[in-house]
Amino acid sequence: MSHILVINSSASGDTSVSRTLVGDIVRGLVEAHPEVRLTCRDVDEEGIPHLSAATVAGVRAVAATEAELATRALSDELIAELQAADIVVIGAPMYNFSIPSSLRAWFDHVLRPRVTFAYGAAGPQGLLTGKRAIVVESRGGLYSEGPGKASDFQEPYLRQLLGFIGIVDVTFIHAEKIGFGAEARELALTGARVQIAQAVASLAMSPA
Ligand SMILES: Cc1cc2nc3c(=O)[nH]c(=O)nc-3n(C[C@H](O)[C@H](O)[C@H](O)COP(=O)(O)O)c2cc1C
View 1 (tube, rainbow, N blue to C red):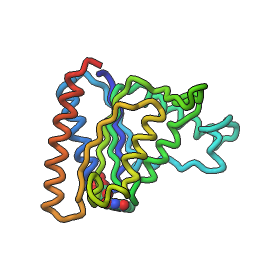
View 2: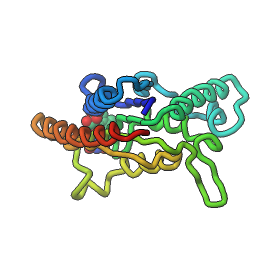
View 3: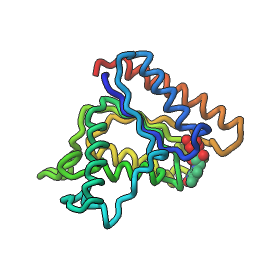
């Protein structure tokens, strides 16, 4: 393990559950591998622009205008960070049953044809292979079991987005029922930290 890319996307600043847990993961990995290089992206604070008619060609076609070239430059930078990473740690709160639009804008910049995915005879092929990801999913309600499960458009979507670009080794950390009061929130944090300890131990032991 030589390089970790950390992506935070919560709009709740210092009170964010996902940011707190992402911090725990990073501390654990750095303790196990003090030499590791960290690259951090805060897509909430930085505000990755949403693609528009003026900019979409910068990612999906040939960049020509100033706006398209600027989009291409940002897409290049974000993809280079992803290509360099062995492990990607993502803080992904559930917003309206899915992910924050800031995180979606980041994915819109890194899913680029012929660079991070390609279509071949066998269909789509992810080009960012050999990487692992840990994704913290913080949620106001309960979605990992019970009736809420059918409304979880967060985890299947993240699994699909990451898998589509070749990142198939993904560990999801759940912090659920955050909206159920202080006690439930503490329980969720404690439970998530148990999951994190296991995930970090397994990553720290692995030679990659
Ligand atoms: C804009 C917005 C939309 C949300 N939508 C949902 C939702 O659909 N389902 C849910 O269970 N919680 C929802 N929540 C609650 C968050 O998932 C919960 O507060 C979680 O802790 C946010 O992660 P964070 O603490 O890292 O910001 C929403 C919160 C916000 C701010």
